[in-house]
Image 1 (cartoon, rainbow, N blue to C red):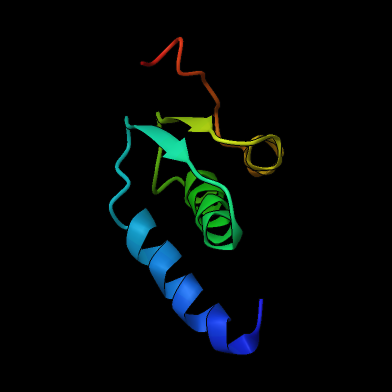
Image 2 (image 1 turned 90 degrees about the horizontal axis):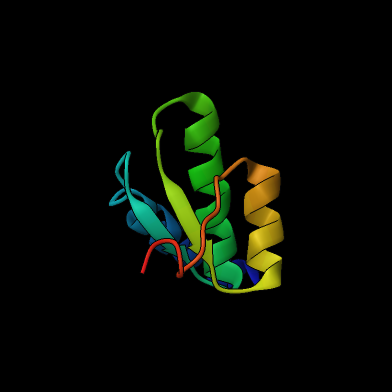
Length: 80
């Protein structure tokens, strides 16, 4: 990601995460902006500003990042 893209992508990720509320079932996308959002969701879970949520990852890479960030995962079968 270029420096010119980094700022807007981070802003978009933070705007998206601002809409996340405790108790939600989230879909976690794939790509550079999604990676930033997943990291921020993990940070907020660790800080305690978010809790009691689960997420459905859209790729193996996102699943691994979410696990590492401490985001509880689920599947579409469990949460259609």
